[in-house]
Image 1 (tube, rainbow, N blue to C red):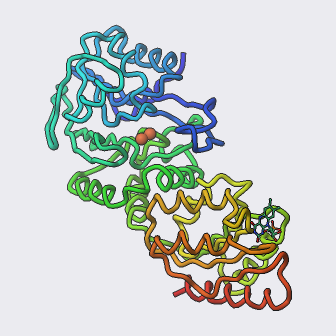
Image 2: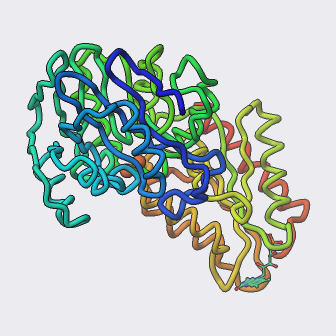
Image 3: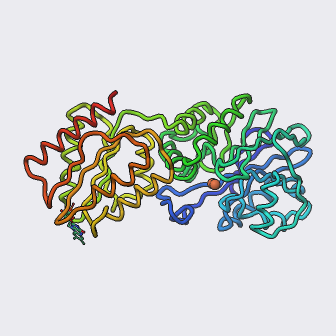
Length: 396
Ligand SMILES: Cc1cc2nc3c(=O)[nH]c(=O)nc-3n(C[C@H](O)[C@H](O)[C@H](O)COP(=O)(O)O)c2cc1C
Ligand SMILES: [Fe+2]
Ligand SMILES: [Fe+2]
């Protein structure tokens, strides 16, 4: 029987790993898997906080049964209704028919609409408390982190915040559950990828939520994905603060689309000039080979972005266009960008990029460089100028 991990006395980790699903939300690759975290409080009354995706129901129910050891489940707290967390809701109601489902007004609407479940609802408002005996839960509404019904649940004695998607990310929990049991940097990239691609559109709402939490003494952060932060919760909270304020580091992402290599050659040339200028963080990323979520993750981190496109049907190369469209949806506001590309007869790749980014309010650096078929000596000189101006812009 699997050993159940204890968060503190009477609070247990009952989440599960998913290493079978290849695409989260059927879009985002999961090379390192993902965990769906759920927590069970055993007190005078028992409470489960969030559930897991339906595909992992059976190991999940087993864990809950092991912890409850014949006791009833009194409450199911639903912080977030996305099915990676609410998937097992109906099964929990069926397994524990006396359970009361704790959520706000929107949660209850969503449960009815999504699962047609009619259970005992225990509706809460912002700041309401629920007494479990020794421990109390307090609810904080945090809309749009990441859905409108989203809330967080604070356990007042040990200072545990059950934060939903906030502070969580991709990567299964391979033995270690706590921040002091794992290599935190291994997870941080995947937490930023989760943040930038899934929650990142709602930066101002994340800021509002952080403001709300700032009054609480938080000793343990229990998100719905990834490690539990008990030794250094401040680290993930401050990362979230930076990401949601769109703070950047010095660095340049060169995202390019190429069919036959001409555009890639220009990308590599620019990268070398940037390195000569002392830019240590340069990422040259092939949009055909690397999923956009990894590219957007890097762009979230660095100030400079250079897009390079060959021309395809009078327009941007489709895999690169996809990155640019998705990036525009996220509304990342304050990057500097440059553009280059290649064409055969009438062009369109560079023009297309400029058209999209006009709407982003990003600052154009240098002159766009577009070459016919292949870059010649004079073109490389133009590329060098573009790179030098980018180096200057990201250093300032
Ligand atoms: C399928 C295909 C479609 C293309 N469509 C256009 C086009 O509409 N307009 C244009 O100016 N060049 C077009 N080209 C030419 C390429 O943009 C040109 O060969 C460019 O140098 C390719 O750059 P790359 O080596 O980075 O792939 C097309 C090439 C291919 C293979
Ligand atoms: Fe979510
Ligand atoms: Fe989630």
